[in-house]
Every structure is written in C-alpha cells, then in structure tokens.
Image (cartoon, rainbow, N blue to C red; front, side):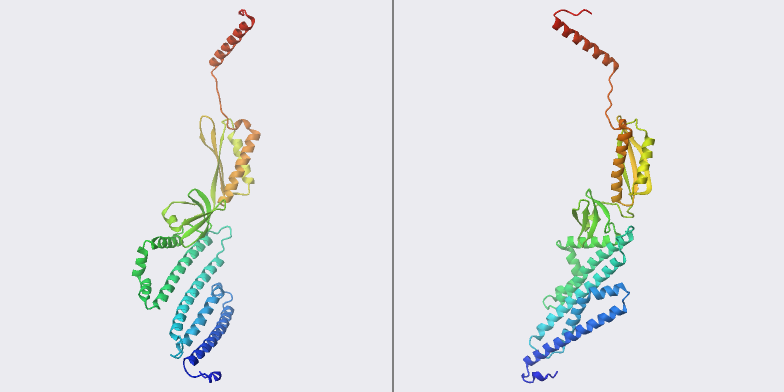
Length: 381
C-alpha cells in the first residue's frame, strides 16, 4: 500500500503500524457502510415477514460489530510481519470476534422468541394455546442462551494455548458429564433439565393459576432456574423449577380456565328449600360472572342442629368464580334474613314438663317460707 504522506517515514515497524492502523479504519468504515446498505435491502425485501424483520432490528448492533471485527481481522491477517504488536492484536481480535458472534447468535435467538410472542398474543380470553407456545418459547430460549454461551466460552478457551485442553473438554461429552457430576453444578443442571421438562411436558405455563403450598397465585415468569408466582395479595413466591417436577401442586388452568365454585350455608330445618333454590337461580342469572353452565342447590348434610346447603356455580375463570361466590353468599344471607329470619342458625333447647312442674312447686314453697319469716306467723294453706 503506497501512501504519499508516509514517504517521510522510514520503512520499518513504525511505517507498517501506521499503514495497518489506516487500513483498519478504512476497512471498518467500508464494512459499516456495506452493513447498513445490506440491512436496508433486506428490510425492503422482507418487509412483510416478521421473523426476518425482527432479526434485522434486534440483531442490528451485534451484526454490525461482527462485520467490523471481521474486517479488522482480515486487515491483520494481511499485515506485514514487522507490525508492532501484531500477534497480540490478532489474538484480541479473534477473541472479540468469537464473543461478538456469540452475542449475534443470542440476538438471533431473542428475535425468534420475540416473533413467536408477537404472533401468539396471550392477552385474549381463550389464551390456552398462546400460553403453551409462550412457555415453550421462553424456556427453550433461555436453554439456548445457556448452550450458546457455553459454546462461546469453549471456543474462546480453545484460542488460549494453556487452556486449550480445558476448552476442548467443555465441548466433549466427557467434560460435560464431569461438570454434571460435580456437586456445585448439580442444582444448576437439575434446574436446567427441569426447565426442558417443563417446556415440553408443560405442567405449568405462563399465567396459569396455581395453588403452591396453600397459596393462590398466577405464574408471572418462568426463569432459567426458578418460577415467579404472583400471589393474590401482590406478593411474589420464588419456586425452583425442579420443585414443580418433584412435588404435587394444583393447576386450575391446565386444560381450561373454567372452574366450579361452591357456597356452603348452615340453616335451620324450617327453611323451605324450594324457595331458597328459586332465589338462588334468580341471583345466578343476574350475576355477570356466571357463565351459564352450572347452577345447582342441594342439601348435602344435616346434623342435630341444622342442615347444610351447598350452592354450586360455574364461572369462566377463577377470579370470576371468587367474585360470584361472594355475591351469592351475600345475596342469600340477605334473602334469608329478610324473608325467613327464623331459619338462621340457632340453638334449640327443650325442658321436660315434669321438671317444669317440680321447679314451680319449689318456687312456691320458697315464697311461703319468706312470707312466714317476714310476718312472724306461719301462712295457712
């Protein structure tokens, strides 16, 4: 490369270094310009394809860095041997290029995940399919991040002469098996495998309603090692992924969000059940939370004091079911208190007539004795 302004510089390492530096700047500028032109062309050609459009948007910066580092690497490969620090610069550029490519692959994975989420919105009424796809996408995305990061670290270590054997062991199955067998890596790998199990078998999904350790909540987020459950009072329960594989729990939305709710009342035997059933059906039909499937009132139990009334209703989801149960409970108690107050729970007492007579005789005798004490003379019968 002949540059007129370098004629005054003596041939040698200094001149080679200046030439390489200028060539690096020119190569980076050309690479960035070509990258931007290429991105614009791709966006214009695939305007209506969400996958490619999201890749060009999300992975733009990472791809730009990769192109620039590749241009620098090409310049350093063709640089003269007497360029100062050529060996160190080449090594640093190689490591940076590996890291940039790892970053680029991760951004491509993220763009695929974002496109799947975009094409399957879950903020709709019937979102079971969308939540299933979204759960698989997020768990598999985090698993792919882990694998890509592991591969990137392995390739970086392969460039180090002293750590080349360790880097190769990470890529080999024996090395991975040794890491799995390690005590420190066992919980991490266990959660990683549990995440893959959850992604494919799907005992839980995003926005599922769960009962975990007696707490009602929704799955807010599924991370690489734990699940965030948003409890009804806005607390957050952090549960390891492996816990859902090893322990039983309730999933109220596993196959459908519809659910049945019950209301129990203990009432007196004198209450006319048919009147109560008619009022119950009227309240159900007027409640906006009722989905019209189930509305049943039955006497399910009785003891020596009262009978148990069970009112069974259905709703579209667990939130509506809770509100519906509360509304029905309030309405039925108000109806009974207004029209049949005698049917409210009460204690029954009964006294034997013989005991009543004996008590009356004892009372009259006590009165007579009191009069004798006051008058000073016995009262004649």
